[in-house]
Every structure is written in C-alpha cells, then in structure tokens.
Image (tube, rainbow, N blue to C red; front, side, top):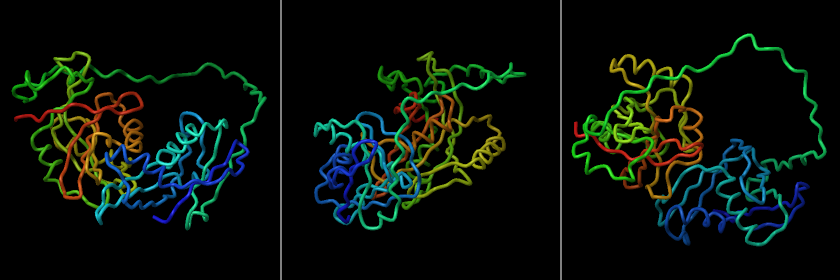
Length: 338
C-alpha cells in the first residue's frame, strides 16, 4: 500500500490541522480483530463510490469529508496469501481509531473533519459541510385535521410449542447449558448443515448467500424464547453480490415466496445466510453492513442470520446470529439427528 495519510481539519470551520499516517490507524483496528500482529503485512485499500452519511458516535465528533466514497474494501496480505478481505465503512476503520487518537492526545476541540490523502484520491471531492445554524427558531405548521382512517398491524398468532427433543436433537438434556438460554435458538437439519459447511459450491471471489426456510416454535425450555428449525438453505435469485457486500432485491423476496409455496411444506422464511471470504475468529462476526441489512429487512424477532466463513484453504465455519435491538448477538444452534 502506497503511504496514505489522513488529513485533519479542526472545528466546524474545517481549518487544516496537519496530517497523520494511516497505517497505524488500520493496525489499531485490525490487530484485535484478527488476533495477531500485522507488522510485515500488506494492506490493499479500494475506496468505493458508495456514500455514507452516518455520523460516528462518541466524542469528539468526526466527519468524513470524502463521504461520497464512504466505504473501503480492505485486503490484508501475508506471505503472498490473503489473510483478510472485507468491506467496511470508512468511519469505522479510519474514523473510529482517529477519534481514539485525538482523545489520547488530549485535544480540546470537540469537532473534527478528516479526509484520506493519497494517489488518485485527490480526484474525489473534499466537501466541507456548512456549519450548523444556531439560534434557529422552528415555526410549526398548521395542525392537520383528524385522520379519516388508520392502519394497524394484526399481531401474528403465537407459534406452537416444541423442545429440542421434539425437533430431533437426541440427548438434549446434556446438549443444553444455562448459557444457551437465548431468546432465539436454532436447530439445523442435517442436510442444511452439510450444504452450508461443505456441499454447496461458493465463490472464492464474491460473497454469496440466500434464504433459510423452516418453522418457528415457542421454546418449551425457555417460554419467552423461540426455537427455529432450519429445514432448507435456498439460493436467492436476483440478488446483488460483489466483494463489497451481498444484497437482496424485491424480486429476490418474490421468488422465495413462490418457491416456499411450491415446496408445499408450510415453511416460513426464518432468515438468511451469506459468506465471508476469510477465516472466522471470535472477534470477527457479522459486519456493520450485514447488521444493517438484517435489522432493516428481517423484522421478526426470531429470524436469524447464518454466517459461513470460508478460509483460504477452503475450510468453513458456520455461526448463527439473532437481532438484539439494533445489534446482533450470536445464537446457539444444534444439528438435528433426524
């Protein structure tokens, strides 16, 4: 990677305040995630023309002044092999460690801007946002008349009750520990386990994915929770896929609805799955892009996301995640014996 720098701009007047090297910022982020020193590795960055207008939480506040290219594909090479590759928002991999560095330096300024400097990047517009107005007065408009009608969602009936034994997990008394008392737990059919961990062919170049079909139950051993039985992993049609991310389209959902009806097994759409093209670690789960896709698309609390990590040697690891507010938490799962 050519020596890239981050230029700093002080206050909402965005006065230039010098430059700092980018590589230490990247190492600060990725060494804890990957779990090793990255000295001697090579970073390759591809800044993607996808806008990101989200604000970075915490203090001091920071704004990416090249937000038209708000995402970056990060590729880390070691000894000629790919150690890691995945897209991230620039605010996460550059803005967050920069925020920490400013705090460590004891800077009193509460607002900063930043822009990445390097070959080819100067062609990307550096946009200084207009300062926020002070002493503004909002004048309310005229009140509207009463609504003629309203729409409300009809609550779905409670699902049937089932336990691990009912869903084909033998020796379930020993299989379940107190730590497994999750609001959502998963039981995977043996055929789905074989597909996701070995038999389904996945690309080594782009992320791929699809839908999870099955049934949802009220958990007999955890009355406030759900058990999700995954009976099929179905490839999604009409999706968007790249090294940047995996996305569904409206037609993807239309096709899966038709397919579930044609299968005739009274299955529900219980979630989705997709791949990450690097080995799994405890610190590397769903990306913020994945979390945004799940929380904005799959609204039932029992719908899950399956993540298949594919290492450079072809080995796979499967994990399941459930919604936890606007975040995602790992969900326990078992493979059914039948």
